Image (cartoon, rainbow, N blue to C red):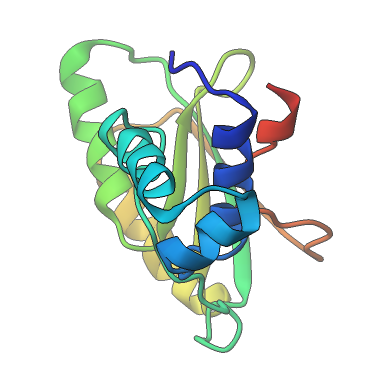
Length: 154
C-alpha cells in the first residue's frame, strides 16, 4: 500500500476531475512549484496509484443505453472451468466483471444498444462455459455514476 500525504490526496482529487491539466496548472492549484508537483505525479504513476488517464464517453450518445447486470451461478469451480469462463470478460460489452461471495458466483455489468443486442451477447456468454444459472437485471435509471474514488476518506 502506498503512503499518501495530504498533498498527494489533493493531487489525486484534482486529477480525477480533470486529468488534462498541465503540470503548471496542477501545481498552481495545490500550491507547489512545477518540479515537485511533477515528481509527485510521476511517483504516483510509478507506484501504480495512477493507472491510466482516459476520456469518459457518454454511453447513450454512443447508442449503448441499456445497462444490464448479469448474475451467474455455477456448480463448477475448478481452474479449467474458470479459465474458460474468464474469456467472457473479453466480450466487448462487458465493462465490469466480478467474482463474488454469497449467492451469486459472478456479476457482470454489460452495456448494449437494446434487448436484441443483449440477446446476441447472452448467446455468446453462455457458450463460454457451462453455467448453472444466468439472471439478468436491466437498469431502469442511473441514479449515481462516479469514476472518482473517495480518496478523502483514506
